Length: 520
Image 1 (tube, rainbow, N blue to C red):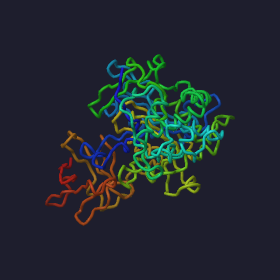
Image 2: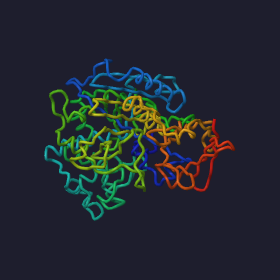
Image 3: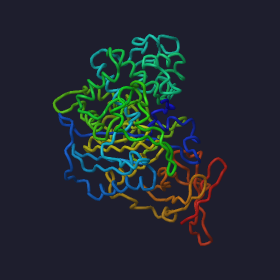
């Protein structure tokens, strides 16, 4: 069966697929934020690659209960068809819950460790494979790709280096594929990329690129002298004990029978676009996506990364390789702007390294930035993501298979509230913000009786749109317009008052249009 190609944009990547700010917020304010999913791990995995079960922790039971309720609410409100959350601290499971369905049509409940298409979370494993070859002196970061792939020895591609494709600075666009079965092999696919070449000068800008990641996968296969999936299986998956992770490609149909259905859409508008009976979605392994995994399995990989490349007494990747992967190269911004990509975690900005995302508390780069690392990971556009805080020995993995949903970003907000900054809430709210706080009922465009909530956080107003995300508002200008921090020139909010000076409504302004949202 043939399938339409879907770029593996994770939350980061989803933002990158958008061509303009207006597209980013479509329809009206918000386009589908994929998430990013950032799967993350912090704790050391044992030599057998298992995690101890429930244990006592300084993390309050109420916080874990609230996270469980939050995941359940996503399913109850139809913001995701099914979802799973795994929380690990010091290598021990604090919370592992699953809600909803892996197959809604057949009423198959989502079980813990349901097999999922992890899309762009594959990229970090592809990077790890490349790092192994770099450590062995077989692949060199500053060498042109053309040194290894003859098809790149042309005027358009000759300047592209291995470093460029590992850091999304090759100039290749998000994708050059029209369909997943367009080519017969990874070699043929990547050779075809070299024909049009990059869309911008290599090294000039950060452009999140599945095409570039596929080039990395092809480099691994060519230099290793075997298929990408065979090399990754032997060198990474097997040593880490990732027994439930594999490439969902032709020949693995039997194992794919245990995978969750893939859904596309939005709240109250989900439709299934893949089920196991359809067969493999991909013909062969790519560097950008194609891996399937479970929450527990992917935590093993990320734990290894977080622990400096070690698993038990075995060094899988060198410390230098881990540092290369995590060193910040490019800040992650909304395409076409200098605005930082949104995150639900307070006080950090996202940076892209060598196919890993790091969240840092400053804009320092290089060796100094290592001291500012708060968390790391990656995500996948079908709704898989996770996060790791090395200093906290904390790992969180969140999986759905609801492409187009916003729950991964909302989960970041929940984790920030209940795990990272518990108890901060809306305390110490400045008096001048209090009149605006409360609920407002939206009935315009796609919003039907949706309750927007205006609240305060860190001395700023936040407009929380449940079906989308919580948007920070900048201080009002001379026209009393509170601009969206993400898009200050595009979208603003004003508040209406009655004859007693009470705030009775908010108005959203975008592109000359105005939408009234009365107070509840």
